[in-house]
Length: 237
Image (cartoon, rainbow, N blue to C red; front, top):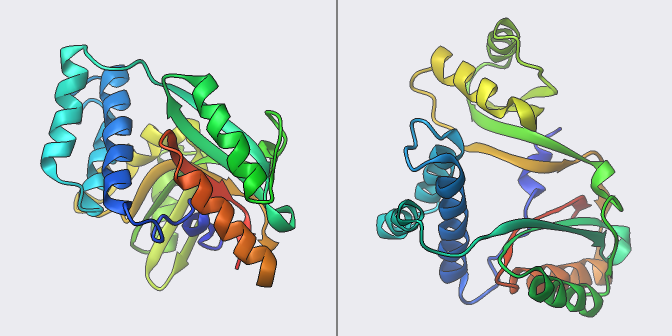
């Protein structure tokens, strides 16, 4: 994996309204997680992970609480996951993950973003086979000890690596809860730097010069679509 998980999402740092978009993204994800899995973080690991990540990214507590209260009330939109696949400049493989209450509106905004960004939107399955749908964890620890802990817990480990004292663990997405429980039971004081399910690229596509500039434009265009939650790609800068 080689810490490839760090490239799993396109940066939104260039957008002027980064905080608004960040808050909106977490609000929507937390609402969906709470509505589908319950509002108790202790019983809903997906919700707990989202809350922890939101706090790490300094999302205000009132934004988190409002999303949970909305889910608890039964009010609000009926969001669905929509994923779009395609290619960016230089043949970079791109997966766009959305939460939407109107798929016609969403595809109507995703398609022109690819076109204007010198990319090409594909059909389902176009590039997804080149990504690992995995649970990814990163935290301070000892690589050998962590691997032994997971194997003893009968976790299907895809990869464990260490870089500067940070251990990164990748398991199948279906093993998320099992992996997280094994880690938190073995290390009660564990502090996750990453704790989520994502699409990890199996390879890399180098980009430089004009192609890199075009790719950054594509990322900006996609990030400006309100329904976009995450963007995964295999670009290497």
